[in-house]
Amino acid sequence: MAPMVEDMAESRDIAISDGLMPDSATGAAGFGEPDLDLVNALQIDPRASWTRIGASLGVDATTVARRWQRLTDSGLAWMTAYPPGLAVLGYLRLHCRADAVPTLSERVCAIDCVFSVERTSGHFQLNLSVAAEDAAALDDLAVRVLGRLPGVLEVDVSVGMRLYIEGGHWRPGALDPAQRTLLAQDRRLPPPVPDRPRAGDLELMLALSPDGRRSAAELAQQTGLSETTVRRRLADMTRSGRLQIRCDFAQQSAGWPVNINYWIRLPAGELDAFGAELAQWPEIRLCAATTGAGNVLVIAWLRSQHECILLENRLLQSFPNLHITERQLTLRALKRMGRLLAPNGSAVGCIPFGIWPAPTPSGSS
Image (cartoon, rainbow, N blue to C red; front, side):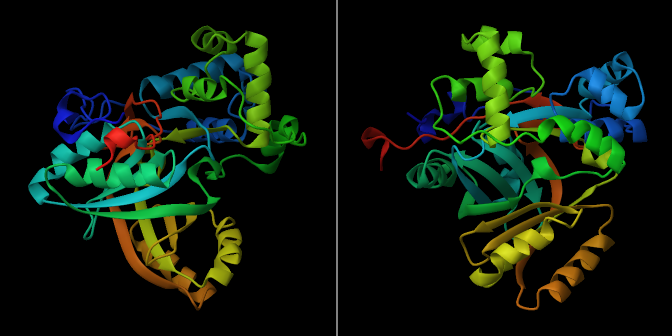
């Protein structure tokens, strides 16, 4: 059962240990073109051997493995795995007392089902992306837990209805077409026929979530599955889309310091065309149909604040029926897909994914 409000200080879902949200970055500031090439290669094929990665980049396997180790040790890049489709996605925004924002930031970052947290401009100071078992679980999290946190004045809930683009598909475009083709050639097999999750699948996905390149031997030891079963299931789940593995990096160090969130209202009949079009725009990180006054959420990574104006003009010119109901600039990203972030965007900790459970009768209001 989820923790009651009075027990939050002791709960593993809410409490956060000292030092997990530092005021200063611990990672190195440097992020060069070879690093971006490596990140781009791992985005295309996250579990490719270092030999294949090195061949695509024109360097030896030892060099790319050492470079990746440096990036992960400094928190400048990391791998994440997660199971899309196994949870209801919620985009929750909290309006808080100003003096409570620092404490609330730490408390919401510590909740395992809150996989991303941003402090933003505007009426809502905190934006949360959450995973819940169902709609009732999302309501339970929003009303019984988040709404009762000291300092929270308002909780706005939008439910993700359809994802057109998400961060795992964003690419920096560092590699040339030949390099991308070389990396993608083993990923062209037709996906297997989708089937129901098997016993142990969720445990395997969660074991992989802190590091999408964990070896089959490590995963087998943690889950109790055989190495052969681990390899076969990972291949099946990634090809079918039931498991997504992504490579993220410290965006400020790599040259994309600006996050902008647009809440958009668009006629329902135009949503699919809108999503298909934005999938071609390189600056778009996320495009999701949602509930609420704005029925679309768009998130972009940009190189300057001036580009926000250019992007907004392009949106309005391309879709005359589009109306922007709210725009939020991310002041600081605190957590992304389970990674706790320093002010410079480098990873300084990891909270493995969780899914907020449906409330039981004893836990209902």
